[in-house]
Image 1 (cartoon, rainbow, N blue to C red):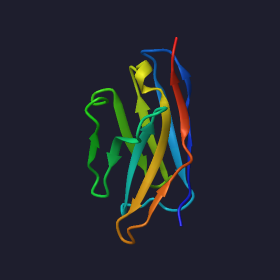
Image 2: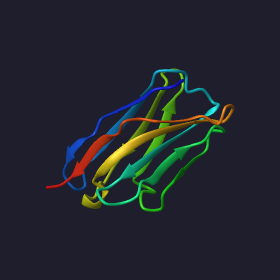
Image 3: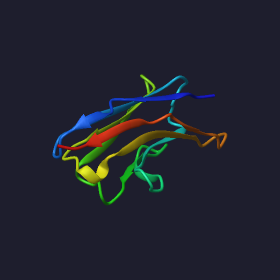
Length: 117
């Protein structure tokens, strides 16, 4: 069983940066695919970035070049560095983990990111 706790959200001005963290209670070894999702009010949850179990990363087209996903398996932590933030990226950001061995999936409770002047 893995519990995920996000942190690092807050209020930032357009063009600003934030770094989100997702701390896992259990091990997020190489057998876990880890992702960040976001959900804006009235919209569906969407994938922002993914760090796969084989070490590759991929991003939504809207964030490519501005966001960077990374992970520290030794610290059981996933990160999302967000630069040049836009008001339309105001949303609750969620951490997601998928265990490729058991096919179990886990969600964090989310952290609010508000981009506004």
